[in-house]
Length: 333
Image 1 (cartoon, helix red, strand yellow):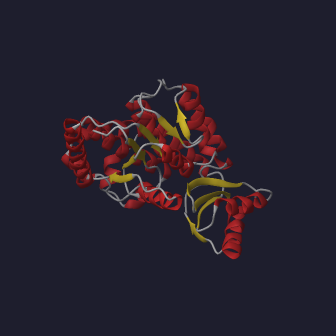
Image 2: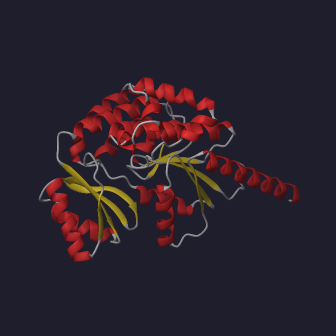
Image 3: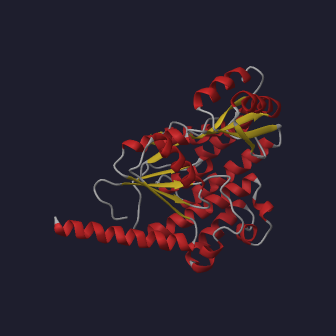
């Protein structure tokens, strides 16, 4: 992407929860080159992902292991279409499972290895979810300090933690069913919080995922990692990671740790005119960014999404316009 010297281009890749019925069907039909990626992902996963995504009822793509590889396959396809146009970002980051697309986009792993890791991650998390009765809720319209203060009390009752720090006023709480339910009632009663039961198959990013984390760590150890060519920002530390050992450690340990999305967004406030592009299904990350930056009073940024043929072509046109403007500016100077 042609950028002025005072712009920073960031690609954001969505994770589980971003799935949509028949997502990317138009992309599949119009861009034949993407079919090879679908085929590779299906072979690695062991099911016909095209059929699941585009022909079957939506509920069949909701299962955790399927959802994670379907979303990441769509993310990767759109990234490849953009890269084919010679457009590369300054930074990449993914929300939870979307980190594995970011890992691939950074150049740290090859395509087959990225899809293998996605398949392993989803499988192990799905298996772990069947062993415990967990619950996840989204707590909104309450600040971080109040969320954390009440959480400290309930941690003495059972497994409970912040699974996702999504924005300044959206927190996903995860853990034991009874403990999270008690916390939910407390937040409604004392703080008037808006609480939504996420009805997930398991308590992601909690100690319920200990076994999944251990298995995933072993899978990661089998994959050849290279130093990223594009800086990758990770959820675990909310900072750029280039050390291969740290990449392995953080990618596995995020399964039982908080997704620090809001802290990640905060790091870009100091960057010159950040341009965020949500690459993949839905528009969830764009919404989180806007609400977070509004709260922080940040106005000097741009955000767009690329999730179908229309938005992809629109993005390319915007890129061409920006390139023309940059070139004309260079000529005048």
